[in-house]
Structures are given as structure tokens and as C-alpha cells.
Length: 124
Image (cartoon, rainbow, N blue to C red; front, top):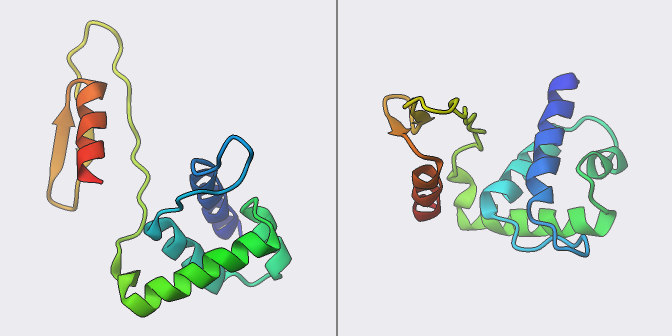
């Protein structure tokens, strides 16, 4: 059960990055919606516990599920799972790279945070 709670905590944090200043959700990406639907399918508790654990209201979860069903119908459920990237900040005066594990066989090294951010913007 704690694994599910940790998963919901990560989903909640991802959702919070798409909140406006007034607290409403805007422009939720398709991969996040698909991850929420998959978590919902694995959820064994009540729906109220689920949407509360994500920091959503009942109608917000209903809208996410509706959009998720449309994405599944369109075949967009083949998106890969979200994998958080751990970024280690090197201490000053050291030329230690930030290593981004791109897939199982590839990794990319960035020696400056600005280059990593620019790469991520272009890759999305």
C-alpha cells in the first residue's frame, strides 16, 4: 500500500506543476493523464481517497478520466512511463557532469545545467 501512496505522491507533485496561480489545473500533458488512469486502475480504495491523495476534486478527476479514455481510444497509451531524473549538482570548481540516462544503453553527459535544460526543452 505504501508503494501506491508513494506513486500518488509523485503524481500529485507532477499535477501541481500544472496548477495556475489560482489553483486550477491547466495543460495537463498526455503522459501524466495516462499515468493517472493507470494508477486509478490499480487503486483498491474508494474513489474519494484516490482523488484526495492526488489533491483533486471529484469533477477534476472525472475530467482527467474522460480525457484519458479518449487518449486510450486514440492509441496514445503506448507512451513510456514517467521516470524521475535525479540531478546531482557538482560542488564548485569541479568539472563533474550531470548524467541523464536516456534509455537502457544510452546516457548523455551535461557539464552545465543550462545545457541540460535546453536539451530537455528541445526533446519535449
